[in-house]
Length: 178
Image 1 (tube, one colour):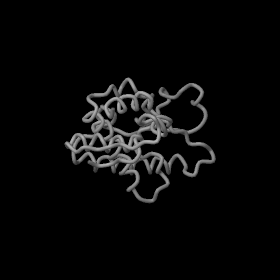
Image 2 (cartoon, helix red, strand yellow):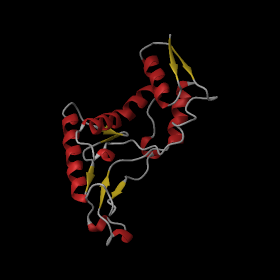
Image 3 (spheres, one colour):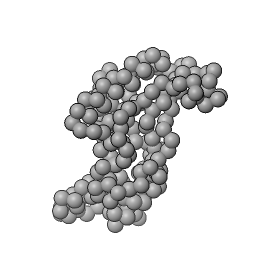
Image 4 (cartoon, one colour):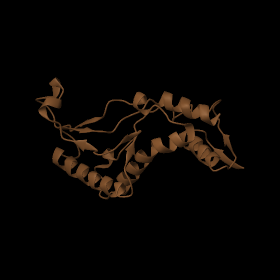
């Protein structure tokens, strides 16, 4: 028997992964139920690596990409198929503010490096992001796709990055853990 300290998303995932391998575990948690703290109270974003554009290397972005593209598969294997599409937000758009640490051109270059990293990862097999094939990470918006209030203002990028409702995710994982 393995003792797992903390029944947040990480600890609960460890317990479910162990159970899938036939290994008994005990979850220790200070809350009255699993997944009641940070796992429940966050933005729910499943990061693809965009927020690491300032990083000189690609290691962190690669880690984020690998985690994001395996997240749903692992949870589906432990909890049964989950309704990812119903739980998702609209795709994120990143606006480049005038005082941004990087210009729109620098961000585009960083995002192209992220595309290259994704292509390298995809060489091992197709990428899945929240139950859907991942064939692109981002794009520069066309004038037709711009919200009216943004047509004359700041540069921005469309991404496929999404959030999922943490309340629904934690309820499904909690049910399986219990």
